[in-house]
Length: 494
Image 1 (tube, rainbow, N blue to C red):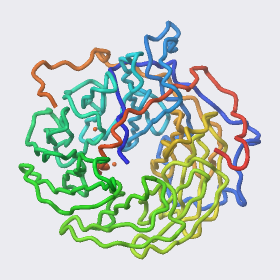
Image 2 (cartoon, helix red, strand yellow; image 1 turned 60 degrees about the horizontal axis):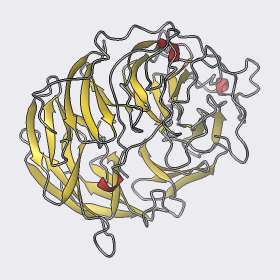
Image 3 (cartoon, helix red, strand yellow; image 1 turned 30 degrees about the vertical axis):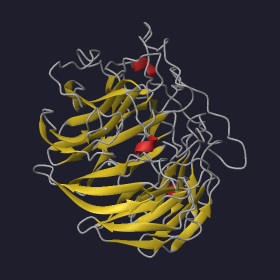
């Protein structure tokens, strides 16, 4: 389904909003495993200067009090969708209900923050970093749930470089020295100079379609859906994949697809696409298409009955994650089940794979890390939770795992961000240094009366029917420390 529209607003810092949490020293809520993570050989070295740390992403809020805490915050109603993108040892994090911040992945220090100009009468405000490249951070900014713009920031300072109106759909895709996104009226895909925002070319969306921007490999594409869902008796959804010439945007139609979900990513030159299953995102999924993005040729690969849940392509395997904590790995070429494991950790986010460590890492909504053997699915270890938030339970969790050298950086669904050594995942985090001051003039919204009317890699395509705003709540505490959360209830841990 469509990546939800995450709003953003303008810029300011709130150092007091970064709360710390340290697990019990005695490990009472710590690692549960049949072996000790510290006994595993260290395959990937920890980065120089790294230490374990934890912060809570600041809320998208009203004015800060004299203490630095956000007293006049906006309650977004329970759903939160934080996310982070990484470049080197810097993290750029935000999401619905959060401003965009830059965090040092080695220490947890907050280098700068852009705090939203929140309209408390709307439910879709926040920020969504779409990518970072060549010293620029690409962020989606929506002052309301019906308007959006692409704001480009200097990665070192957080200062605004340029801004342009865009569609409320997050579909920004980066390629070469350009950025591709939908126009505000959804009638064009516009390629702009990434450094200046000037238009290079545009692709006019065919009448009766809605298109989103995508980049597969280094080539821009339009994923275009017939804007007729629900108008036919059988409710068939047709989509067209269009390759766009980098130089002038001239289109080449590659494939016409019936009732398919978003592209999962590339395996070689093949784009993997799941067919729809009776309107249910979680399946069961009887098959997957392999679409050659050079020729448009496609073949169907049958999947096992265990292919149920949210699908992710990682490490050359298809993973299906169920809310109950079951994880299934499938061979992407043959469709053969490699393994299926019922874990004790519920509401897991997308997995990442470390081939060097033969390990699959996942994070739950509450920030509980889970490590599985890549070859068998056997549990290697799981950590204590980092948050009392147990997830929305209404779809895929936004919890996330990244790697910075041998260190793990993880994000719980409520915006709790932390970094651990996988050999000592419950080590007490150190306290980050004081946050930096906000960028000058950062609270001013982007202005440009001459702007035309118009958000990992590559952006995922999306169906127009899912163009709805995501609501979020800011639940992270602004206290200096927080007591460890209570253990989630059986049968599984969140």
